[in-house]
Length: 273
Image (cartoon, rainbow, N blue to C red; front, side, top):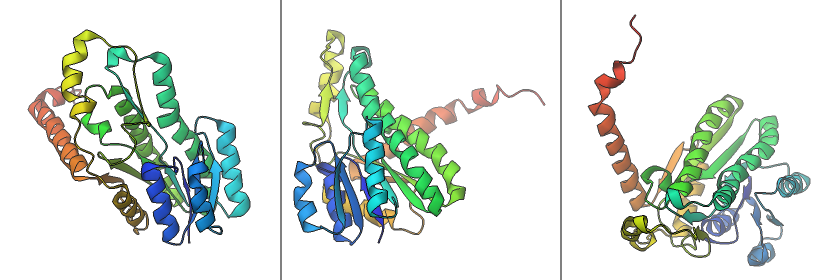
């Protein structure tokens, strides 16, 4: 039995993962800003479900949640940074305050939780950090630049963190979902109130209305994450959904073409030996 702390557990992927992990017999600290939607899990799993409110942008809220885990159980074995939301805007349309809020939730919140969980994990010499990113960090659709940037920042941090804590017995896994049947495009999304006419065509053609259908099933994603987390060697990157796989490979091929095309120019900048 392991102890998981999952943020954004009240709906979508977070809710599905919470249910799956509890059903598998593990202990779960299910967190959300509003925990009313989690009352049924509290009743169904009185011994293994700890429901607590958590605002990932509030350091005191994070400290209180981690303290509750340590009071009831030995500490956090698996931290899942899932809480987040989307923001649609052309880069020029981005509102400073809205972008700051986006990064506070999608990037700085996970960083604060990681820093709060690491002392206990280091002390036990065991732990897994799961950062929920998005294939958007790779495919970078028009109108999704700020969201993509926040997720790319989380992935960059995860890569360095993995190398720092690996020798200490800890692991880091990034999850890149594609489009899943959640509220991500509904109540979990925000959009700029600024609209510049010059971008109407490209955002109308490739924005929300033209995104791929939400094919992914959250319960299947939850099962996949649990399976990967329990593997003897969890993957550094777990891509979820056939749309995410297609996007990942297309982006990688596109980048490789330019790298290969300008290989000699790249090499030309080496200092002469």
